[in-house]
Image (cartoon, rainbow, N blue to C red):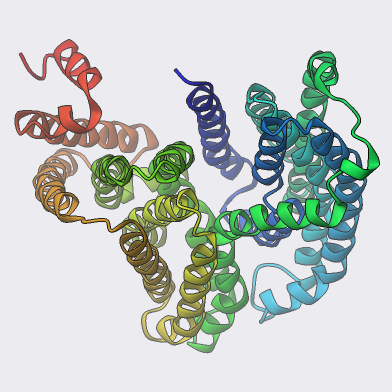
Length: 538
């Protein structure tokens, strides 16, 4: 395995585990603070994620590309000077972002809270935004160090530090909330404030991990660094111009989901209340849409994130070599594997929404409705991530920014009128249309730039859709039979029914796709070995 692909694999595994932990922690957290209070947590994290993305400005990837490029040219001093000045710059950026988020906390809370009937006050929302902002002081500097070490080909520090950061954050979050609510019999609002502050504690854990690796790797890095004469040094203006060129498209891709959520944050409650829905119900729907159901929906999408990271170096390599045939082959495989996994997973979640929501949270007709209608959007999330990665791979990053802006404009224009017309389903439809516009532009540009012909992929998509329909019918019938025997009145039964139905769906989908040769073609011989062990095939 090449060092590039090995590094990508390490980063992908680390990111996958980190993302997975970031999805599943919400389930026990919900059990501790309750559905009525968890909305406050969500109100803090949407603006935090946006400010965080802006503060770090795609820094790990940008610095990694910069250091790797100039190291290859023999100019090891460029990276040294970048990290030396960047450390101060990123510390200042973090402090500025922290101050800015504190200043914007109350104005933003005033936009979010539109009625006295809503569950929380403006002051409570503003306070929780301020508590989460402390992490902004640490994260930008940490991102600089991650990118610098990646530039020297050391991917393990980034992967491990991301994982440690997430583990420390979740332990502090769940432990703190449990102690406040269950042990000290405290207020759930206090527990929420304590929990969002966990982002700062987690960041410290990640930073300490990086310092450990830095200490170990410093002799190796210093051994190759030679301070360049002043007249041969790359000017700082050119240095940072190049960094911004690399980082801005990465920022927009990372911001995509958070910006769509920001549109809901700024418009959802106002539109719902204007439609005659009470503020309390609006808060509940907002939380279900942008936090609770999204955590379930994003589980299959995490796989797409891994694919997007893996395809950038592959597509870039073949495109730079002018090998369009291999570029097309890589794209074909990625689209097909992505949809082969994501489409049935999304539809399966939609069908089993009642049992899944009941098990992870509590029984709720509202929650079931939102999850069932929102689950197919996972396909859009996955396609956006991968098409954006492909555009970066062929060095057309500017189109990523343009397509995302078009998608956000579509979501912004349609969100309020569609909410008036369809309630929470209007916000889901606006998200689908916004992402749809973005994906369509991305695919159009990819086709033009690489002369890509999607005929094979379209045929396979049709086959995947047919297989998914067969699977969905089997899952639906199985669920009807199980609930006719005994309704899923407890969490245990809900989990049991979800496992049985998902198992039936997976067996049917896997067996038919194997018989047709699709599974072997997309997933390789590993799928054949697994299928034989499970005795699904001979």
